[in-house]
Structures are given as C-alpha cells and as structure tokens.
Length: 474
Ligand code: G3I
Image (cartoon, rainbow, N blue to C red; front, side, top):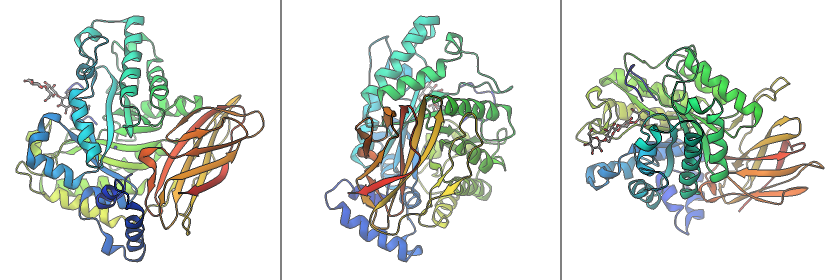
C-alpha cells in the first residue's frame, strides 16, 4: 500500500481447549471447561489473548513472518498468546507466483504448518492486490491480466483449500478519498474484477470465508468507508459470494481510532457479513495507547459478528512501523500496558456472546429487525437461517449454536421448498441438492464450545428456506 497517510488496515476454543481439540480426549475436556465457564465466569477468565478471545467465541491473531519462526522468543510468545495467524508477506502474489504459472509456497507453508501443528487457524492474505505484484503481472493489462489474476486466485485458494479460515480475497481496492475505486492495473481490467475474484475464490475453496480488506475504512463518516459499504451491500444484494469485511485499523495521529468505530463495525455486520479487525496496530505508548487498545477490543466484543482481532506483529520491533511502538509486546518481548488493557477488555467481555443474526436486506424489501438466538440449554445445537432471496435464486446463511455441553461435530437438516436446488455450499459439507438436504461441519468448525456459534451458507436456484432447521450435535 502507499505510505501517504497514517493508516492503513481477523473462533476457536481457549488454547488449552483448542489444543485439546487435536487429541481424542477433547470432548470430556471441553465439557469440563464449559461447566466452569457457565458456573464461574471469573474463574475462567483467560490468561492469554487467544484463550480469552476464544471464551467469547472469537480469535486473537497476529501477523507472522516466516523468517522469524526460528526466533525462540518470537515463537514462544506466538505459541502462548495467539490462536490465529496471518502471513505478513508470504502469501502475497509476488511471493507465491514469482514467475507466471510457477508457484512457490515454501515460506507460506512454514507459517501454515506452524499454525496447524500448534492449533491455530490461518487467515489468508492476500489474493488480489494492486501492490506486491510480481514484475510479470505488473507488466500485464486487459484480458491477459484478468486471466492471470483469476488463475492466481484459483491456484492459491485451491492449494490451501481446507486450511484457511478466511481469505483476504481483495485488498485495498478503494481510493483514499472520494469513495470510489483506486486506479490500478486490476481496476483497469473492468469494474467487475473484484466480484470476479470473489467468485473464483469461492469455487476454489468453498469452506473459506471470503473477505474484502482495506485501511482507512474505520471512520463511518469517511467517503472511503461508505464506498466499501456500498460495494458490500451491492454484493450481498446480487449474491456475489462475500462473507466478511476486514478492517486493517492501523491507527496513529494521522489516522486515529474514531469514536464511531463500533458504528462502522455494526453497520457492515448489519449487511450480513462478518467483520474482522485484520491488521491492528496503534502507535503511541503508556496509558493512552492502552486505552485505545481496550476500546478496540470492547467495540469488537459489542458487535456479535466481529469474529476476531489480528494485530500486525508481535513485538514493537516486528512492526512495519517499529518507531511508533504500536504493538502489545516491547522489543524485548515484555508485555506492555497495552497488552494488559487488551486482555482485561477481553476478560471483561463475559464468557460467551449470544449470537445476533441480522439478515441482509433483500433487494426489494425492508430488512427484518435483528434477532437474538440464545444458546440452547441442552446438549444439542440450534440452527438459525437467514435468507437473501432474489428472483430465481437465493443465499441462505446458517448460524449453528452449540448447547451448554458444546458440540464435537454437528449436522443441520432441512427440507428445501419444491423446485429449489443447492448449487454451492461453503463452510459445510452438503448432502443432497433438493428436497431433504443436510449440511455437516467441516474440519475447522467441527468443535464448538458451550454456546459458541459458527456459520455456513449455501446458494441455490428457486425459493430458499428460512426460519429454523434441525441441528444435531455429534
Ligand atoms: O525480504 C526483503 C529483504 O530481502 C530485503 O533486503 C529488504 C530490503 O528492502 O526488503 C525485504 O522485503 C520487505 C518485506 O516487507 C519483508 O520485510 C519489503 O521491502 C517490504 O516492502 C515489505 O513490506 C511489507 C509491506 O506490507 C509491503 O507493502 C510489510 O512487511 C508488511 O507488514 C506490509 O503489510 C501491509 C499489508 O499487507 C496490507 N495492509 C498494510 C500493511 C502495512 O503496510
């Protein structure tokens, strides 16, 4: 990204529980943990960022540089505190396709393998971006560039299929002012390049959440924020497969944390997408910096569809803005005041967050009001459907919420209206395409803590289902 303004811009179980999910004794462990959470919230307050966020059904991640994984201090903090990672540079176009058609995943794989073997989820960053393109792509234009971009999206998303929680499919496509698109070689291939990238990503990895990611979109009154909002609203209305919006949230005096940040997050969530804070760093020090970190965490926890926070590096010395000391650990790896404020804000957020489902507005009707679905009290699960219907087709998003015992696997069953058929499913494995159909969890969303939620969706022809469906845990 350009360095004009200060600026620019990620639900697992608690780390011990998440790690336990990798071993066969997980069910019993999770049930014991769930019982503790319900009966004694303070006793279950997380002692690490990841564990505490997981108690709120969220993740807490960091950007990771592959070459630092041999630094034991760095890796020690990473493994102790975080349950999600984003490759800082290693999944970008210049890194993964240095020559056209020749893919290199060695550095990215180091990060993905480290994450998976330590029970962390992975955010993919970034498939299509005007910056950090390989030289050969910078020299392309028109149809050749469009095809190269789509092939890149398809190849990389296919290679990592099933391993990525969420992809930044398109990064930083909006201009810094005016509310319109940024000029770039990709933009010059046609205004539909963004939706083309999202469709290619969905086809390549139907299980990954697909995000649009940008910076300076934190302040609700800014034209850029409104431009991105209108694009997401349009995508949802037309059934373009978008699941989430990433807010980079690089804050400093030139681009400060805005008091309307929570309004921004909630407004996007109200369109029917998850929101994620994807590259958080806050320049400053001491109590001022700490207070702002706390505010950001409280804003995310207040928005049911804010599914996680990623900080853009671990120690201040790891930051792209190291001189601004914007991170949670000092350059010696010590916890800063900002760390304590972040953990305290996470722990103050309670033990679970009841899911709020706000359906996206159908193209021609008034959106229905938000509804809150409390977690079921028993050992099962519930499934709440949100329908976006248009003439001839639909997208149904399904929120699965585990009961008090949590869930180790789940299946949602429903009957489609006559004439309807499923054409595409994400974040679940579908059985059947018409009539009685069912959807089974995929690997990354199999395990749900007590009262925790996950979402999947499916697209189809005809009239889609809405309301509730049968959910079976186990
Ligand atoms: O690895 C080479 C090294 O061999 C060489 O000696 C050195 C000389 O400059 O460069 C090194 O590469 C640098 C790379 O970071 C790894 O440190 C690149 O020059 C440098 O441009 C690159 O900067 C990255 C930047 O994206 C590029 O746009 C930052 O690390 C990374 O934090 C930053 O991340 C972006 C997000 O992707 C999108 N949002 C904004 C965010 C901050 O700019």
